[in-house]
Length: 118
Image (cartoon, rainbow, N blue to C red):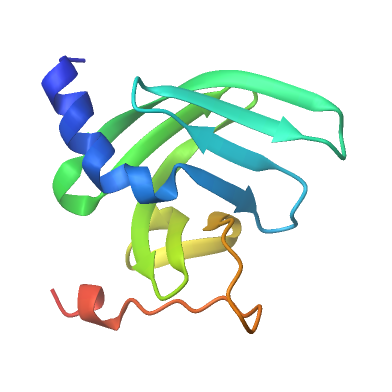
C-alpha cells in the first residue's frame, strides 16, 4: 500500500488508535505505520498484526491479527471513537471496539444519526 494512502487513512483512524473490546478483555492498539496489536492481560496474550484501508469514503478498515480479523468502520461518538464491526448501517456492537477514555459519568454515548442520513 502506498505510504500516502496509509497517511491519509491514519488521519481518520487515529482517534481510534487505542480501543477496548466490548467485554473489556482485549485492547486494540493501532499505529500510523499500519501495525496492529491485540493485548489481553486477562488471557496473557499479545498478538501482532496489520491494519489497512478498505474504503476511505465508507471509513472502512481491515484489521488482521492472527485469529482475529475483520472489517471495521470508524464511528465518531460523543465519547471519542467506536470501531464498529460491520458497516455504518449495521454494526455488531459485541464485536466492536470502544475508546478507552472514560467519561465523567462512565456512560458510552454513540450517535450516528447524521451519518445515516447520507
